[in-house]
Image 1 (cartoon, one colour):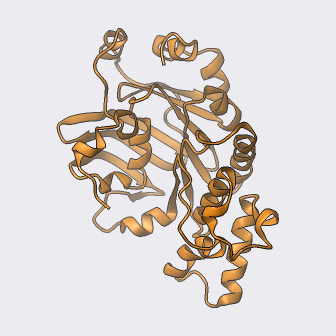
Image 2 (cartoon, rainbow, N blue to C red):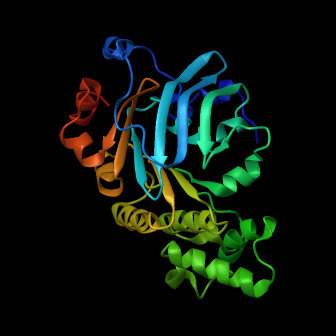
Length: 292
């Protein structure tokens, strides 16, 4: 369902719209290019000189970033810095916002993500997304998982579909908790279980990349810990990019971290180094809590 630019910018943080200039604007204006390891060998996704606009408002400025295979990369930064906008550009979710425009080179395994030949529906099967708020379908637990495989023709018969559902739920660490009530509504699960159901639903169509937009922000600490353990397990089979406001979470789950500020990709590097020895003053100020 399309939404307008006006609707999108009512929530600047979620839309990635750049807020009014702050005391840090001078440092951003003086920014001459991303610091650190934003380029990797043999990336799963490669983006070069990406700009994103909502109408006349520019949300992302000249972002160049590679996402490595089977890595977890965390995208961090203050609210409204553009990290969610960048994430959504990777599977063309921004296409659903009227007036949104993306330029630059965005490539998935050598294929242009924004090519006219790229079917956005098929792209989103390859590059799945887990949102901030769990959004199970108003269907049974089983049908939540089976929906994608059915429409994409991934199962030849009921036996194969059953196997996909079970395997997806197991990978999401949920099968043992729901195996005796697969016909129950997915909306009847707890918040943490619903989020794992959504992850299982994403896995069910055999994606290559999983995008996560603050997947644990609405969950309690126990459910958050389960999701974080799951992310580490999923990395064995998938490439994962996660937007998070929690620096502690970024430190726990990711191998590389990318810091955005006012729509610019400031610094990228090994997560441990980003949090212990940042090279840019904006990164350091954010990590040390001088602003956020």
